Length: 194
Image (cartoon, rainbow, N blue to C red; front, top):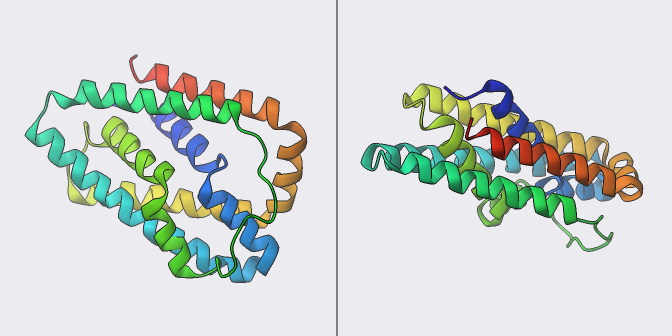
């Protein structure tokens, strides 16, 4: 049985850290207003849900076909989390004005999920490490998919709502924030083996 604290730590750290979804949500809200950015965030929610459902199907099938894949998937998941920790530690604030116009649509948010490596790798990691080894019932897997998509929606809406504040704060204190986030991700990766 996975640790709920480790699962939730990984979910919240990965979902709320800067990535294409959060940065685009923040940018859309600052450019078009919070109300118009909601369409984009609903597209993210829908696409994120579809990606997690696909990851559930893939991981459960893989575990049923090849039960010995669990240790390998745990190592891959831990490796990806460590890579995220390194990238988080080394990242710097982004530049303004690099976003194209018409990015506030439902379709933009939806399609972004299918080309966003962070979401795809996140889905495979979270499902193969914390969900598929322990749960197989379609209703439970669907519940996890909805929960993870909902957390993503809360994250993107938070970045949209408080985008200006976060951008300013992150720009001034990004080194210490990156260090703390990276160390928490390292903890999540190491704890997969205990």
